[in-house]
Length: 164
Image (cartoon, rainbow, N blue to C red; front, side):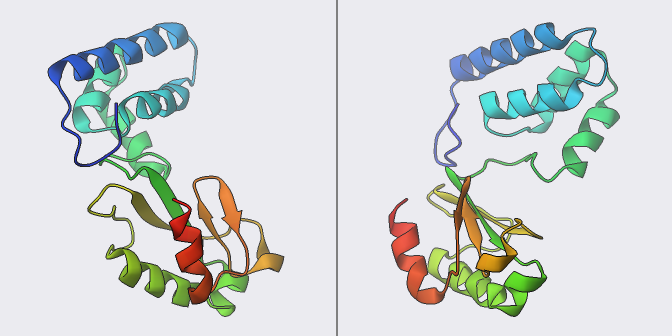
């Protein structure tokens, strides 16, 4: 399944994704505390966790839907809406905030025309805040997917984004 917002999902693609999720559930059936692992893999397969996927997992794992939805809504790494191809996270921990993290947020909002928590209209980026990414000595920092960018400023943003 594609994470691109513009991609129309066919019934065949949807059915294939649900079959893959069912296979994951079969691997974890009977194992205590496996919901988070199943949700991670389901999100990897489907791209996000809309209500229909949550209901499917609930039914297949014989877990109340409220529990599944509670876990999905509690953890920030789960998404109930389509996400961008890449995730940008700007650190706003104390060191990054003091050294200009908020300016980076404002520049990205303007440059990408996206609000915090949103996804660009082309489906390229999802834009989020991180409270700390553990690179305080390199502040201000941001991540794109799993790559950390150090001492980010407005001048560096253009070249960083052009890589994607």
